[in-house]
Length: 316
Length: 316
Image (spheres, each protein chain N blue to C red):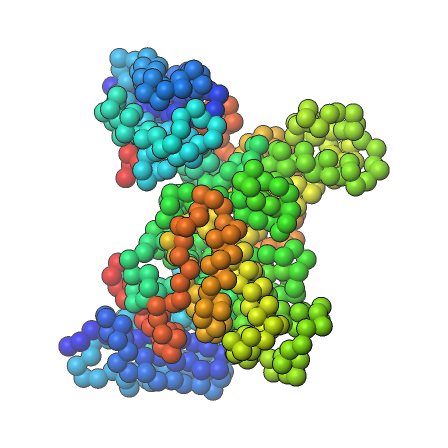
């Protein structure tokens, strides 16, 4: 019998899941449509059945890890997640355990990404590191002394909502100037619009409706030397470095891993981030922190992160 | 025989030390002048002798904790401390161990204050909290999962040098807009000068040379309803809240303890800090973090913190 765990990533549209062995190999993968199940019990039944369909005769399913928005690691719940169909507090771990009598571990997607990095990725030998996921927002998973930081409430690690520009850009959280309004895929789009508004610079990006503008289009324009795209990339890198520098003063990590859509820009992003970190970091921390791309391929990162959560817990 | 530890606080002018029992009672206390010993070996000899002079026949000295600027907990060293007479890297723990064959633990003063709070103060039942020491600068000790955060380098917890105002006030670290240039005793003085420069407000503080202005004078003026002093206190509280709010997004502590000269202002400081934290914190953290005065009396806090460091280590 081969021991496996299930990694589950619950998103607003899809719930994807897979079986993962101890070495990080994804043995099977599938998905269900989250919004097909407005009733949580029906969702749990469908998910359990779909997971068990992947389990072969020679597999021994020994744990389930779940990444989900607004997940509470301590309680095993999802609490008031705005993009999921279920209202109030959902006792996710408890419901899953009733269907499968194995340990069920729940956390948010950015924390799962951090555990994935620690168990299967670039942080395998690290005790202190931070993962920043740069998508529509900015998620973060912080590891200190080999443990994910959950804090008193279980909701620690909200670096996307630290204020980097007092009175700055409006954020989805209702506050102003949050880190994620600058350092994320959508932050990059906003920066392009700001530069287009402030300068007379010619740019191919002027021909694209703002609602169609994406970080991918901007990265491609930057690769083609579009001056606005290049300036926007540079500013995004400077702001990303700003937030990284403040995080280093807090927990002095060995590395900060960047993950998600925005990082596909590659060197156009990483080079200036490293430059600004080096230029502006407190002298005592100079040269102590690496800025690295995630060591996990994006295609199955969510499933691997959630599976790593289960493997990591079973190890304890 | 009564088990005791020595708590030592090395400062630029004085080195104070005392014997402390397991309950936090200071049994004896004394000091030597740090600057009388420009040669480190002579300092160690003098310190050891002075500590041993305090040890009575029925005392069993089982450990020594030392708080010192730029101390490296992992290595037991002091590294390039600008206000101490010794140059380079001083192997403090090793030198002390040669004179006294007991465990010697070294950390910086703010981390020692955090351990003091955890072992003898207001954080005795807490696993996640932060101590901010508000003196000339702003020091910080961060505890997560019951452990002081040292990070990859041993120098984690430099919240005083997170940037709160990009391009803001000049800091001693050579950078601009650091938290401690606003939220500290000297930050309060700078804020008074700024208000005096920007407004025509009448104030008794206009009669005092800037070099003589202290946080104590300003707190007294605020208590007497001086409008400039009150406005400066309010702004300092708002900036302090700003830094606290960003820290909560990082580690979600149960409490933030404020310690040091500035906190003597009492409610004039604490009330607006709590108000601004409540007003501006991310909704998910609302009501989850207490803002508290330190539970350790300032008169022997440095010795107690250093002693707590030794007791805490001996427990492991």
